[in-house]
Length: 632
Image (cartoon, rainbow, N blue to C red; front, side):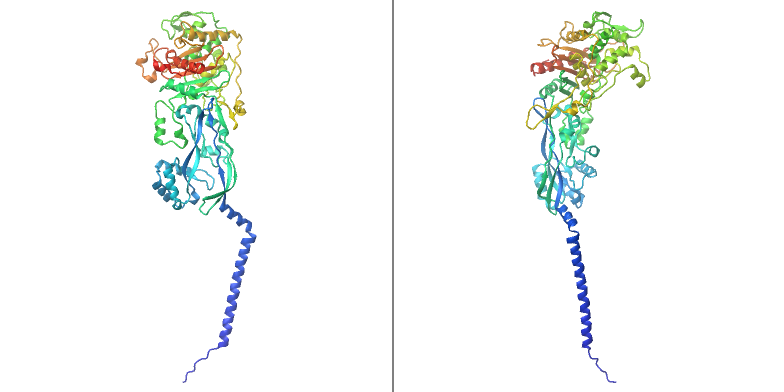
């Protein structure tokens, strides 16, 4: 059978090709219409939205930290400064692999485990989006150069300049000024988060903490243009921050450092106040520590050394040290005895060296074992005769003593800007029944009459009570701020919120104003009388001093035993105390001195604390800043 070859149907193939071409054309047109529609949607309908997104990627709003206010002493000496410091920071949102980045940085600069641990802790704290987290502070110029050369390998890593607090006088003022440190999450929750958007530091203690709102200032903002990597190309708009206000304090740096030289390495405190104004002239607590260690974060080694020291350098003795005031409160007890009519200034008490409530009862010893014989008020204060005060305390009881002590600020914090100051408590009949569930015994009154027993006070409270005595009852509230400094100079301006922060205690008004002179004359006899316990410390003085010594027991001794400092461990010896004001007729300074375990002999207040006070008085009143104690 013959085979036939099929002929091609060119007309059908042409129709098929034409149909396929039309379909393809229509498909392409439809795709182009979809594309055009999408472009129209993005460029026209959604233009504003995507323009804003694009602008936000290119333009960022950054907070600008304000400059922290400076702090000066009463003579214009700078006490707290700001210094530039460079730190390496990471922006989490732009860091790819965090562990790899940290490892690479560790090859460029020195990073220890503590730095990395703190970084992770800060990273996990609440923060604003696109806010950098510091890794290490205090970079050297060489370290900055190494990081800068490797920016291309370290996305999200940058070197930032910051102003950090610097205390030029180191340990001299930390217990008076306090210090600033890194802000933590708990503190951030208490402040205005927006105002602290670019701030890494906050006041932690003392003046730095109390006046934080004044020192911090107001945050500013700037719009910056960035590239794809987030690097700032230029500043488009800026609202400058408002710097913190500068403070002028009543502290006198020269007096402060002179007192430190007097105390040397002793565990001690001195608080000096100007009686007329209540301004704190000096507040020294030794030993001390360098606050600069805490600003950017203290190492574990350094902190453990401070924390574990037996001398407690972190402890502010001036504000938080609770000491039995001992005989330093005898002038106040004497006022109570005179005001209640328990004794007159001329009444005499027989002192055989002890006092007994009942004939065969317990003997309350006088510091002078053989007694003082017949003593009146002046002699009782000048010689610190315990028996006179034992009998006065026993006769009038606790209520008049508590009432008079409260008028001098015992059991309260009357200071205006010392937030860490302890209030302590005022022993009374009600206090003991409420706290100890026990009645008040006559022996309690006897102990209280010489500043022992339940009664404790801080050095600031002792100095405050002495200032009220110097003012003959006129109350002044201790304060450290003189005022806020203006940019154009001039006198410091009062800061109303501080002045109105706390109601002023009522002045001490006596039934008989002559009692002031009688008690103060007794305090003058302590210093200038022929038998005064501190007469050696007042020898050759060009002004008249009113003072009172005190020696507070740390451990008890047997009733018939004699105090022997050499037989006791150094930390078990008596505390030495002294309060004074001068000149008597026009007081310019009132102070309290506490030297822990300074009772090298009986009468530690006169032999240890009073000489320190005399040096301070000479320095302030005469400008004599020569330490004569070194020659002794």
